[in-house]
Structures are given as C-alpha cells and as structure tokens.
Image (tube, rainbow, N blue to C red; front, side):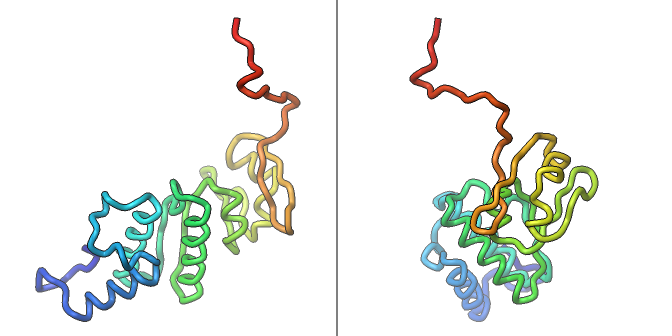
Length: 167
C-alpha cells in the first residue's frame, strides 16, 4: 500500500524483507497478518508509521501521533521518532500533549495563527506562551528539571462526587 510506481501487484522478496524489518523495528512484527481493524489504537499508530517509513521519506508530518495511546506506547513512539530523527528523517508533529512533548522533544513551536514561541521546551513551555497559544491560563511547574503544565488554580476546590449534594 505504501509504494508507488510498481509494475507487479505483489511484493518482491526484498520488499517483504523490508516490511518485516520495519514492523520488527516498530515492535509489531507479530501483527503482520492481522487486519488493521483488529489492532489496538497504539498498534494502529505504529502500523500507520510503518506504512509511511516504507516510502523512505526525508520528512514525516504527523498529526497527533500519540493520541489515544497509553503512556508506555506514547513513550515508545516518541523514542522511535527521536531515533528516526537522529537517522536523518525530519519530524514535524502536532499535539496537545504538552507534558509528553516537553520530556521527549528537543525543539517546540507553539502556533496560534502565527508562531507564538519556539525553541527548547524550557523556553517555550512557559505560562505566557501557553496562554497566548491555547487561550487559557496554565501554570508551569518544574519537576526533575522538566517543565510540567497544570491547569491554573482559580481558587475553587471542586468537591468529590460523593460529597456533592443534590436538592
């Protein structure tokens, strides 16, 4: 599905080996014969990435590549993207997962019809840039040397559900 300009409708032995290598590299080699609808969200994300990698791109444009996956899968996907970047593939991705990106990406760009901030996470993940980007107040804490984004405290402490009284 990912190759264009082919003459034959079936893959060559070399193409099958390349597919197996990419799937193994993404940790989904054992899923090669399963239909994509039978895969979990994280497995599907990896399969989409495998399809893109088989085209041997210079640049990957990804929209929310870690959306709908658990923390462990997000971690693995971001490390994989980091490895691909080190191998010379440019990576551009969109996301709303600020904390995950701060921990894994070396350079961030915040956009809101124009560039609001760009640079390393410590320079970009700051309250002013986040408020201008997302239109909401956010606070940034530093934990283990990394910025962590939390909702701004507005002075109201919500009651746990069991303490909420109904008339």
